Amino acid sequence: MIAITGATGFLGSNLIPKLKDKKVKCLVRKYIDNSKIDPVVGDINDTVSVNKLLKKTKVLIHLAAVIDSKNKKDYYKVNVQGTKNLIDSCKKNKVKRIIFVSSMASTKDYLDDYGKSKKEAEDLIKNSGLDYTILRPSFIYGKNSNSMKKMISFINSFKFIPIVGNGEYTLNPVHVDDVVKAIISCINSRKSIKKTYDILGRNEISFNEFINVISEKYNIQKRKIHIPIPICLVISSVGSILGPSFPLKKSFVLSLESKYKGTIASAERDLNYSPISFKEGLNK
Ligand SMILES: NC(=O)c1ccc[n+]([C@@H]2O[C@H](COP(=O)([O-])OP(=O)(O)OC[C@H]3O[C@@H](n4cnc5c(N)ncnc54)[C@H](OP(=O)(O)O)[C@@H]3O)[C@@H](O)[C@H]2O)c1
Image 1 (cartoon, rainbow, N blue to C red):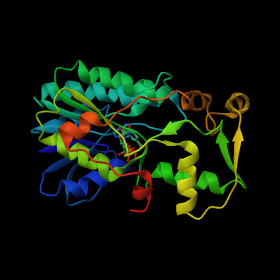
Image 2 (image 1 turned 60 degrees about the vertical axis):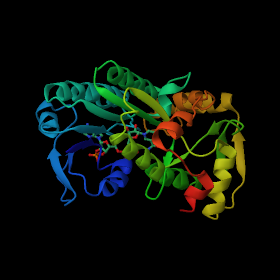
Image 3 (image 1 turned 180 degrees about the vertical axis):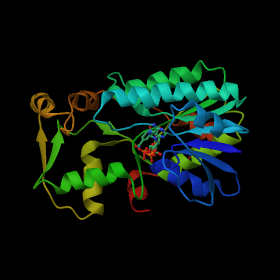
């Protein structure tokens, strides 16, 4: 039996159909009627439901997380405390194997609140004594991806495309199907135990190129306007006075130029990982 947290999210809902013949139990916050899974209703911090999830389980795939919140405390509560609660319950229920989906955001020199929480969660997993594998995807995209939907509606809400700084900082978007394949490879791979893998797309692209590929795909014909970083920092500081929902956050601006240094070499070697490029993925 495989237990999954975060099954209702973007990554989880792409993973579940690919688990085909495997028996799956999922922690869900609201009951869902899905013949493929056995739902256990509860929160990640609720010990009773987590114990129910992990009873008679062999492998835990831990995807649940807060990735975008107006309330800083949510990152710690769900991503760190929630992970600790799962680890304790794994020990109690003798679940040895855990596959944890972290993020490349945990590897940057400048860590925002999300990155900090994922790093702390990784440390808890590494020190847990469990047979762990940590996967660190970069920006995940694919059909029905919330982040991509947000990006397009953001672009559509302006007459031009506002870009923070010169847009030459890079990212390495990964298609959700590639992340799903990496998770499935880990399930039966002894080689991946006690290892951490960067799960990136085929190639690194600048943010300017990223916008060009999206514009071409969705036929958006707008000019890019580059806003210097110091001006973005002033806008984000003023915006923060307006409230936590102001979209341009200081931590986001500061984290943009802090590059993560990832490589897919270990995943290629151990997990047969072979990702597609952003252009291919967007046209999938
Ligand atoms: N999306 C990306 O670009 C990206 C990039 C790198 C790494 N990751 C990592 O990949 C994993 C999956 O991301 P995703 O894009 O699928 O995120 P998502 O769509 O936001 O889904 C998050 C999932 O976590 C669940 N969850 C949140 N708080 C919970 C709580 N208190 N108790 C139980 N479940 C809770 C949500 O349940 P509800 O449906 O009830 O809200 C949902 O199923 C995360 O660990 C994330 O850090 C994502």
